[in-house]
Length: 78
Image 1 (cartoon, rainbow, N blue to C red):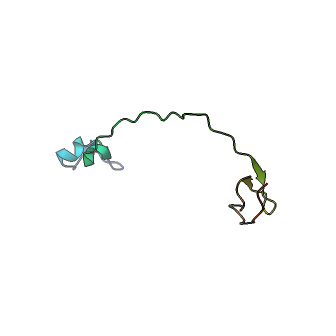
Image 2 (image 1 turned 60 degrees about the vertical axis):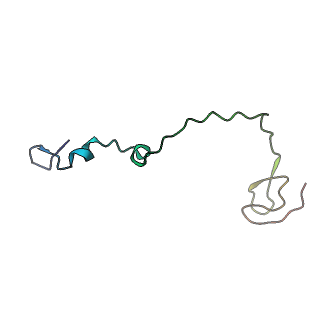
């Protein structure tokens, strides 16, 4: 590594030798060996959730929810 300021010739870095050899990998630094994970495969395709607009604010909420997550308006389930 070399450092250079404005109008200065390149000079060697003042970092100690061990700092120059580091990769910046935090897993390596802390000695963590990540294990590869298998991709999750759903057993069944996800079901679509029916939704409607809130009468108070217009936010889309699931039909099974009785309270709007945005404005808190309580509505009877449809």
